[in-house]
Length: 153
Image (cartoon, rainbow, N blue to C red):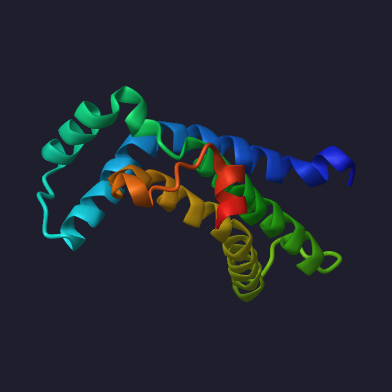
């Protein structure tokens, strides 16, 4: 197996996750803001949260934490799909056309678990970056990008 064939699942997983994440990011930030509002007993209406976000931060507010989302997709989704392909290749016995269910499940669980550990710092950074503007100004961390969040956390 060549280098590209080995890397292809990581790359395609990272790219597909990043494209999907870009589309879903505005919805995700509204979800995070709703969860935070619920914890504080505030208005949890989707329309209210979205209008408040737009009024306070403008359209760019819907993309707060986008660098952390990209890091999460590369680290988590890329690793999950890439490791799954590597694990299934290692688990295949010579002459075995398809893997039995238990081997496939073990490969999937292992890949997902390892990828979750790898992607966790980016996920934490994403939530912190999305919620930062809700803190009182003196308590804000004002992360510039995901690497700044990694270094600060």
